[in-house]
Every structure is written in structure tokens, then in C-alpha cells.
Length: 200
Image (cartoon, rainbow, N blue to C red):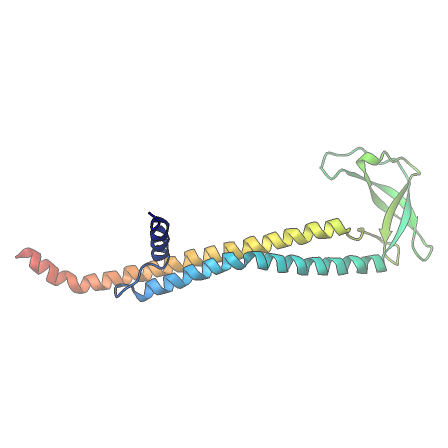
């Protein structure tokens, strides 16, 4: 009564290993190797994703720290009321503004104003600028870095699995073609004698 699960496990193992014995061909052993490599890829995919995410987080954090060191946050004064949102989905309106560079030089340009801010002409909007006063994107926050690192980790893990699956499918397809050619060669050798026997 207790042998059922073990029998099922043994049957599953035999199916996975493509059986055993003198009838097992070299192509079957190569096929088994492909299967083992596929399983290994699935097993190590989480570790690959974790490593890629950790590396990305370290790099992004260093880049954000470099931005905070090189950039300066200043107040830009809006020179006009922001235009209505055009429905592009960005949730910001671009309008003209004026601000001072870190060296004290007046700079004019366009800055993004959040739609829910309700800003009008003369309002102050914080922006980040380079040492020369050019507007620059804000350094990434800790939550943004974590989100990007997690996305990179997930993509790396899924990419590892998908790459292994595609390699497995392609390898098996090549093996099947090789098996078919071998079968055709064997049949071409046996078919004449078989046909003579059938004609008797």
C-alpha cells in the first residue's frame, strides 16, 4: 500500500531520464543533458535575479549619490501660468521659468509643473540644476532605486528561464532532425531485404 508513491516517483524519474538500458541512444543521453541543464537554469534563476538586482541597486545608489554631489536644488520662478494638461498622461505641464545657477547667473527655461500643484505665475517650483545652471532630472530616491533594482532582478530571472527554454527547444529540434536522418539511413539499409521478404 505504501509502494504507490515510490512507483510513481520511479516512473517519473525514468521518463525524465528517457529510460535506461542497451537501447538508449547517444542522442537520448544528449537529450537528457539538455533536460538537466534546463532544470539547473530554473533552479539558479532566482539567484541570478537576486544578484542582478543587488548589483543594479548598488550601481543606481552610487549614481544617485553622485547626482546629489554634483547637482544643486534651486527655486524656479514661473513666468506664466502653466497651460492646461493635454491629456498625454504625464500629469505635468511645461511652462517658462527663471532661476539662478549656483554661480548666481540668471537662467531661463521651461520646467515641469505637476498638474495637481495648482501653480500660477510667480510661484516657486524646486528644480535640480547642474553647476552651469542647466535643469537636470532629480536624483533618484531610495524607493525608486529599489523598484528599478527589483524590476531588473525579475527581468534577469525570467530572462534566464526563457533563454534556457528556447535553448532547450532548439536543441531538441536539432536532435529530432538528427534522429530522423539516422532512422532514414537505417531504413534505407533494411528496406530492400524487408521488401524481398514481403514479396515472397
